[in-house]
Length: 589
Image (tube, rainbow, N blue to C red; front, side, top):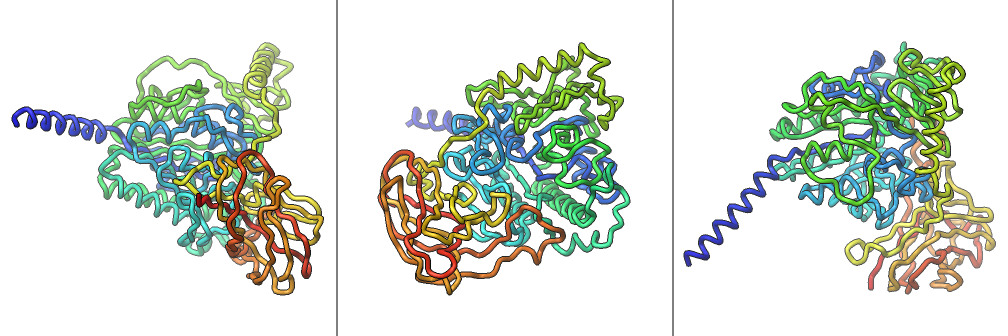
């Protein structure tokens, strides 16, 4: 009996030690906003708006003077997740599958989950929808949001909760923040890694009246350096969206205070690229999509009370690739995975450890274009050289007058191209079906990931939130390049819309050359398009949305392997077969 008692005591002590060590580890809250530029904070001199809660992170922690991300959304997210330049992991674009990073890449969530952190993500994912690209497959135990790059409506839209469709609750930014706060409350006794990728101020330009009313008649005195390019209706809405973001950051910080977690929580705020419209950005050249300074320099603020001195200004250049090694180092946990990182830990800079920081170069690339930044110079993607300390607006090309610097940076770009951009730019990866097994049975194949021929067209120029329309002929085809992980029985559904005068069309679902099922459209469902009524400015390439209905087509047996999954009409009744938002396959056997 005494031996059993001693063993029990030792086990309890060991468990207690684990609990103590876990409690000593800092929580991590990462807030990433979408299309918010360096100039969209009052901290950075923008007097058009007020962002006191975000600004407080710099006052109470550290602000990076020169922090770099990618020109567009998905590549930045991949670099944050992996600590590696995004082309290394297969990211080539922002939609139609090009936004996915390869399944053999490990993520920051994998690292924290391996260290027994609770992991949750709430908001815009934008790095893949199907398993193993879904956030639940990338280290996040809890996910709520949308996996696409764009969403057509920000008020109570359909969202993904751990792989299943649910209805959102109110304005997305508020809703995602509510979910993050709930997650923090649920895990207040154990270390957590909470990732909040907000969808604003990305278009469509929608924001609650409470915020927009502050800017509806705003004169916007501070303008872009090329004011003739600026559209004030867009700027006014962006300003309102940014103040809404700030309000939600304030709610997060208050929750940490109320739960007495602030002292042991690292809070990170950064954005994914330069501004999505022409507006104030500190006089920098370029905006979203550009590899110039204005397209890739963003705010990055990190607070850890008692550890990072308040008001710290970090002068050395840094980037999204550095956040994984930095946060793991601050938390005292190892980075998992066997791939070499491009980023480095910024812990010595944040904690003021007085180390000698070596000179480095950071690369910005998109669409085959490459720009390189040192502490002083930028060589742009056309080969022009700029002294960024004395010419931050990139007005004077010094390539001819500084040939040695130019040559060195051009050589660095050539080496980067050979090392990082060696893979073909065309993405030939299929979309996996059934790879999540019984634990993640639903595979979503949205129109974004599909292809089409004949008369079929997308509902908007940007594929992300689009649906297929104008399916008017038996010669038309809609298909997905699918790779079925395991043969089996699947329940097939389609999210569809069809006007009453088009009911009666017949179509088939085909895998490769084999017809899996044939059916007839028997029920009308054609609610009106919406979204425009909430827009404060023109939405540009974004698709309007419709409340599509799920129609269960039946159960089919899919063969394993890579085959096209096609929809093909045998007859067309009325003007069209139907509109298609998504094909869904749920494994049942």
